[in-house]
Image (cartoon, rainbow, N blue to C red; front, side, top):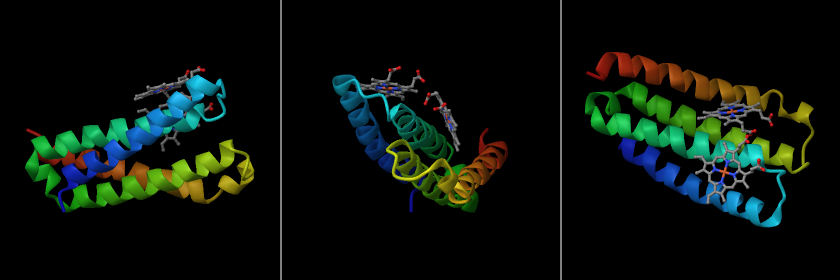
Length: 125
Ligand code: HEM
Ligand code: HEM
């Protein structure tokens, strides 16, 4: 598995969805999903593209076990968090129902970021 390619591939799918929501919001005037739009674009596309580029430019970082763990922690965490955010903003669940799944998803992303930082420290020259 190429971590850099997979980060960029999934990121490029998220941006279609995120910009699609942006176009819908612009056209309809409905701002309910602004935080979802923002985080699909940023957590789903901008960050993963940056990770993908780093892992591509520095193969020793991209081929490490940490990079694989980071990939799965980020993707699972972001997907769960974004789905929960959509459920919350569209009124399908109450804020209390975010607990404990959303904090766990945030923790996944956070641990992934620590692995990324360690990886950068070790392999980016
Ligand atoms: C064709 C593309 C896009 C359209 C039509 C669009 C549309 C919108 C609209 C209508 C809003 C709500 C603005 C408001 O009422 O305050 C918004 C907010 C936002 N968009 Fe986009 N957007 C697009 C692309 C992007 C991209 C590529 C990113 C990030 C990489 C992005 C990040 C954001 C953020 C962070 C906010 C929230 C800003 C705030 O908190 O005031 N958008 N966008
Ligand atoms: C686990 C990851 C993250 C969590 C839990 C999180 C949480 C939040 C929360 C609670 C807000 C306030 C939303 C509101 O008041 O409606 C927010 C806003 C915002 N966040 Fe994040 N965030 C995360 C990641 C990021 C990342 C990675 C970026 C940028 C690269 C980012 C950029 C923004 C921006 C631009 C806003 C203002 C846009 C808006 O009003 O929705 N966030 N975030």
